[in-house]
Length: 99
Image (cartoon, rainbow, N blue to C red):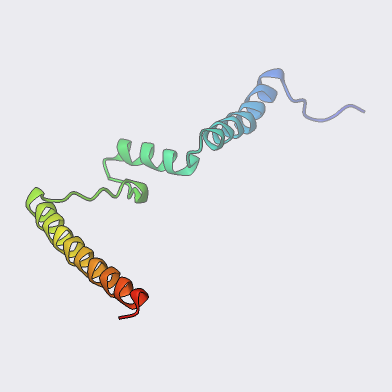
């Protein structure tokens, strides 16, 4: 006696696509170094209208004035440290000479 239900070629094709397409998508995303699930979430949220939280896109911006102030403070610190090094070099030279 033959099987009660036969699987048609079209049904086999759709079952193949249901298994093959996601495997290829996630495999390609892995090879490119991307997160396949995050891509799907971003696409879903772009359609629905919400915004997905992207942890990798945390960009910080600085004001030019703040950066200039920080640079001036670093320059002052460098100058102070250079003076200390010169004083210590003189002291070392003095100790080596035996005075």
